[in-house]
Length: 111
Length: 113
Image (cartoon, rainbow over all chains, first blue to last red; front, side, top):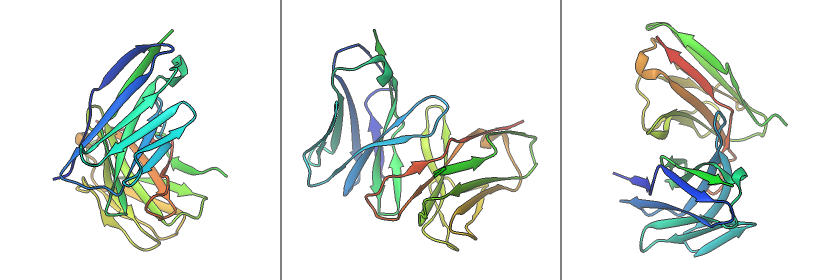
């Protein structure tokens, strides 16, 4: 069955450093992958989408890579700030009708 | 635009009681989804709809029913609530393009005693 794993439940870094979150998947070949941010008590909010034929996508301080050979996506936040503290979810498309979400990685940025 | 709204925000039920969660979107989206989120389990798809009058099962549909009588509304029903259905429920919608963003509601926190 399809499986998505986000490398760790929690990641703690210092302000100004680059945060790198990992999303791995098995038994699947998604056409695209999405990353969402979720703050406590709120619904997820879309951040970035990357397609299978794109190696890298950037948006301001965010960068996503997608390696279909390794079946892995990396999500980077450069010059991290305390306001970046949140849970980050990766999601893969499922036959074009729904998304499968990973369990998320909770990022804490300390000042 | 309000986006995606959910009613109610909080609810406490006793085992065996029934209730309906309402999701409404004002973006004219075709696809709508119901998820549940539990600690350590992430978001899991319960049911979804690809258009008015259609519904389909997701990963964890047992114990739930849904209806999409109007394009803008997607209802999630619990006929006989069980403690295992204690969770946070999120509704989401998207235009239907496979690469479109999913827009989520604020969630409903349900406790079944």
